[in-house]
Amino acid sequence: MTRSVRTNGAGAFANRHKPRPVGCFECDGTVEVSYAAKMAKCPECGAEINLNDYEINKPLQEDIATRGNVTINKLGELECESLICQNLKAYGNLKAHVHAGGDVMIRSRAIISGGLRCQRLMIGRDAAVDVLGDVEVKELEIDGVITAEAFRCDGTTRIDEHGAINGPLKTKAVSMEDGGALNGALEIASTPR
Image 1 (cartoon, one colour):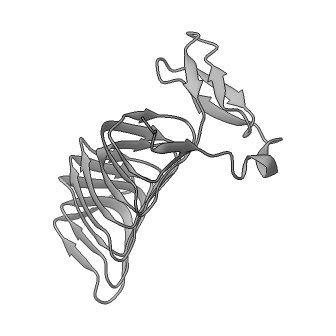
Image 2: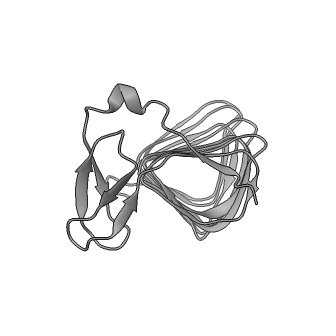
């Protein structure tokens, strides 16, 4: 059986001397690792922490838990219960609960079951994203269509001219271009959570 996931060390060489903190999947422990590392051990509980990057080029039905990056290419498709990663780029179809420590960029059709958490969420112009749960982010940049039960943004929400947010939004600030849409209640708060 051929696996449809390829680990990728691209970009690791340039950053290998800069350590970064990674969190354990099993406990609250963290460990500093180099960008070239592929695996680490939690100093608190001893659990192994996957640091591999994944590039998905075919349909895949497998949970992924890594502190590395995940890219779903146009011919790729990921359908799983849980996707945990640092950064996510989705050009192909995605159906999963997503928790990213960094940025999430979606430029395709996606169904996010159970909610989505990340630092910065970017929805591309042709993307259509349905979140079956809440979206919790630090920054929102929307140029496609996203629907969720609720949106909580600790920073600025930007809705571009082709963008639409469907659902109630609680945010610190909103910037909306002509043509952008917010279809839901808006609450501006200094501390959204």
